Image (cartoon, rainbow, N blue to C red; front, side, top):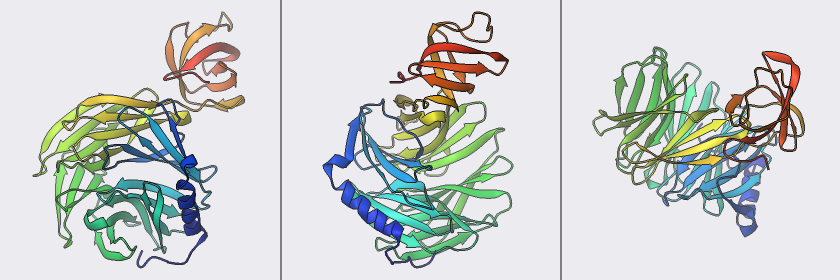
Amino acid sequence: MNEPKRDLTSFLVGALLTLASLSSPAAAQTATDSTTCDACIDIAIGNDGNARLLQWDAVTQRVSFETVDGSGVVTRIGPFGPFSGWTPRAIASGADSLTRVLWAHEDGSSALWLVAPLGVASAFRFPSTPGLAAVDVAAAANSETHILSVRADGAAVVQAVDASGAVARTLPFGPYPGWLATAISDGPDGLTRILWNNADGRVGLSKLSTDGSLATTRYAAEEGWTALDVAVGGDGLTRILRAKGDGSVNLWIVGAADELVTSANFTTPGGMAPRRLAAGANGSSQILFTGGGGQAALWAMTPEGAYQQSSNFKATPPSEGTSSWDVVLEVTANSGSGFCINTPGVGMTFETTYQIQRNGDSVFFLHPDDPIDWSTYTATLSGGNFA
């Protein structure tokens, strides 16, 4: 990625059309936490303390933006598109009140949107660089944007993009054997954090200055744990989100000297997995969890890393007919076969990845250990009814 292409490609025209649509009050839809989050990609926290969610429908190739306030009220703008061949990768909000949206195209090129409260203020497209893939974005001081890309050989590349879309600096690092850059975040100290994972389980945290100097702290491996995301709060402390295959979630808070200040363990909400992390001006943070069928949850964490509250998004009900769907069901009535010993009774809650067929508020499913009989239940989703 060098200088951005400034021709009005169909993608950039689409961005401008999105701007026109977003300027209309009718584009915003407000709902409670019963809204769905069909394909949440990333989260950021704005200057107002509200969470920004990026959603992408890979089937229709349309993008939506949602804002979740402290009461769990959701304002949705969109969907917009389609943007053929494009996939959004990440978002980040800056002190300039602009939210960065990083895009990648199937031809290897990338793009950056600068999204204002009422729409896309600017859009820039960058040409393809063979073997280079954009993975994350961060909002820096002076309205700069930092883009983290990974080369095919494992090296990390950080590019600074100014407000006009020009690439001011390109800084490559590595490759370092076993290490892969995972995420990026900028702090109020003017330093850029780069999160690394090593194949042996170690975690690395680098601080990058504007002159290109890099200082890295490495943390010992813990079996089964992987670092997912990094976020720096307005308090200057770095948060690192980690996850384990057994459903455990861990939030590290790292001090100014890269010392581990806090390490708090939690259990992932049923049927979901931790995805991304964002930190606000006061040091509070939010963790995004997603699951099958559009289930999602936002955990609000205190500046000290303690759990505060959750905003939950209902899974999208399955279409009429048969599909494979990962849901959590609460059995409220049972009208199925009496001899199906593998099915739960009334009042029980269970997670299922069984083959499901929906008919109104009733579901039919085949248990893999009892594939002969269809069992019928009237059920509710964890977090809300089908309706």
